[in-house]
Length: 111
Length: 151
Image (cartoon, rainbow over all chains, first blue to last red; front, top):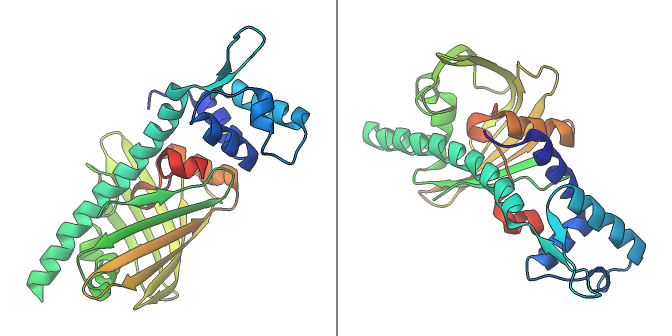
């Protein structure tokens, strides 16, 4: 698999936290600043900033500059790499189960 | 009829769901009859040899997947094999000591069967390593696409 193992590890670790998953889910609907991201949470803005740093280091989000605003954006390619890799596994399982489907059909005939 | 796999980040679990167009007793036979198992279990293009295979409660299994690049050995014990459930341990010999507990209920849908498998690894790290190594061939894991990752 032509994927950077370390990057994958960082992405796994980053998504191993429910707050960070919620932040990624929010950003999947569009860019947002740290203040906007922090709003729905019961935790401090500092804590949110730390979570954002982890996501940045994992390469899952980037921050741009727009005058005074510094909105966060998802990096679609990073998430695609993650889900693409995951889907490889699902398809391997599915292939095995399709062979099982074929075996089960022969059982029907054997009675 | 496709396979659904869920491996929530930060948990040691892998969940798998799949429906089959056959009754639970046939699905059970396909999992417990040595002649049938070798016809479907494992990665594509690999030969499967059963060194030991006693799919009964208290029994054990030991098998090898081979291709021209190498071989992968797996072993485990059957804790429960009953009409509606298989519970077994699972260990990849390339990663010894990381023993997984697998429970696979066979849900009767009236002529059809749904498998709702769940694997519990000794740690999150062990689970992630298993996902990445691909050792878990048929009964693997993953995040169920992005929305499950983000749920």
